[in-house]
Amino acid sequence: MLDKEVAVAQAAGESLCVAFVDIDHFKRINDTHGHAAGDRVLKVVAETLSRISDARCHVARHGGEEFAVLFRALSPEKAWDRLDYAREELAERRLVNRSTDMPFGRITFSGGIADIFAYTGKSKALRAADEALYAAKQSGRNQILLAGSSTPPLLDAA
Image 1 (cartoon, rainbow, N blue to C red):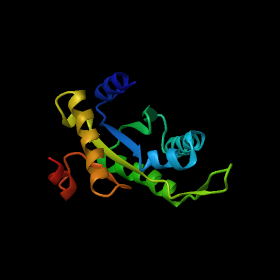
Image 2: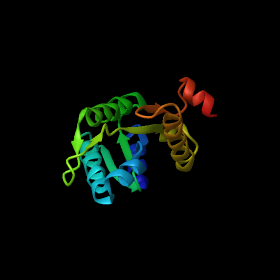
Image 3: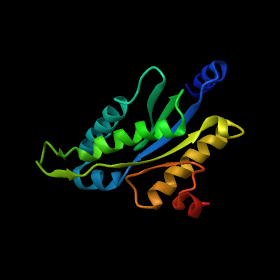
Image 4: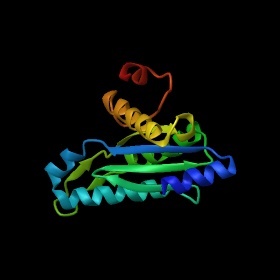
């Protein structure tokens, strides 16, 4: 999918951003509520992210509690707007474990976004998005950071 989107974006002269999203405190959800409930949370996050997708935005599970999102023809700032909308929507929901009626608490995620074409090679862009995700986690979670931005968490993480 990534190679195809890179080729399409290059041919059309469009931008392409990649984001990595990781559910905050997911291990605690699994440990407290069980893996079936954790699977339900994964589905809710996937559904929330899918609402920001369209023909130029693709969402895929990247492994564990992590998702990857490709944003074609959007600047990093516009990609941030769209992803942050999903983050806020999810954080406002109040989910309850159906089998125990116990609330999950607030479900949030952190994310990192990189402009693929701002780096010399896809692997460097993917690493930059992953590092931005890590910086978002390290600086308090429940936020989206742009790779290479001048925000203090990214400067400190370098």
